Image 1 (cartoon, rainbow, N blue to C red):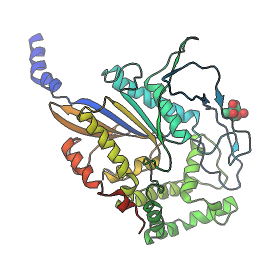
Image 2: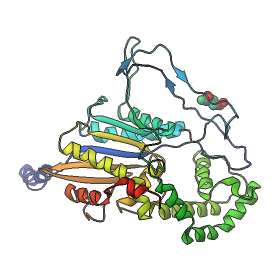
Image 3: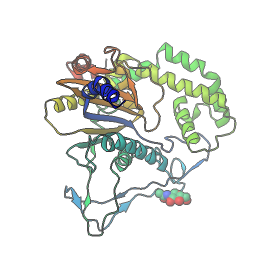
Length: 387
Ligand SMILES: *[C@@H]1O[C@H](CO)[C@@H](O)[C@H](O)[C@H]1NC(C)=O
């Protein structure tokens, strides 16, 4: 019996052990967590309360440890903002923070406890964090790090670790479709919205639009798009808030389908997905190349962004059609090595995605490299020029 086990081990399991690909670099692109609405529904007075605050400390030194003597915080006064209550628009909620914390703690199991891929304690020479310069994505990144590297209460005399979150001005950030960087983006978006396909879709939605106008007492949905209304309804549902009366399950279903349709119509436009995300995809590829050429020690790189960060990337790689990206939805690019060969594994919410050009779950790096290089234009300024 024992012999049989040994034979089994040698013939079946042992080769398997030696052929596993070893993780080299884990890049994770996330959507922020649950947030307050970006818009108030017209003529409604639903109250939104937020509990997550953030304490800050001004300093003119750039130290990796600080001793705190005083902190500052923002407080949004009651009922003086777009939303009734004390949330600012699009503010990360406690629920959203927890979503990222639990994502971080799942990663802790995978990357630290089970495999020792990362060190137990946050080491900024191996963990890199980048975020768009928006409060909810900055805070989402912090939530994820709290889960990945839980902190213990510091002693009174301890210096506190300072963690850098790399952020880029929104005039130059490439983590979302940015018309400041690429003026063609807003022009193409206009063209897409003026296309027959888009106009036809709005016509199909006219009955829902009419009903919503009746419910809100508006003629133009108060300037909101159907997608704006849908994403606000998602906030109501996420916080079990009562919707304005008259909004039915069927309308919500229609709005959901419309929103998904719009995401695919916009980001499924090959030119749009390209100008919206190829520059960021290039950043991801470069990090892999740096790793392969041993030019940096990063092992985990987090990019905290938006639905508009993930959607065009997924479309650009031709992986799948996009449904809406859930809060804290995440796309990973894992660089693996087996003997001297490198592979790229891409997952969306922990499901492995297959790039059509690869047909294999783990895409050989040279194929992935070729695929991305073919997408990268010779000149960004040329593809970004308005026509
Ligand atoms: C927002 O209001 C709630 C309810 O009054 C309160 O508990 C909470 O502390 C407030 N949050 C902030 C950040 O002011």
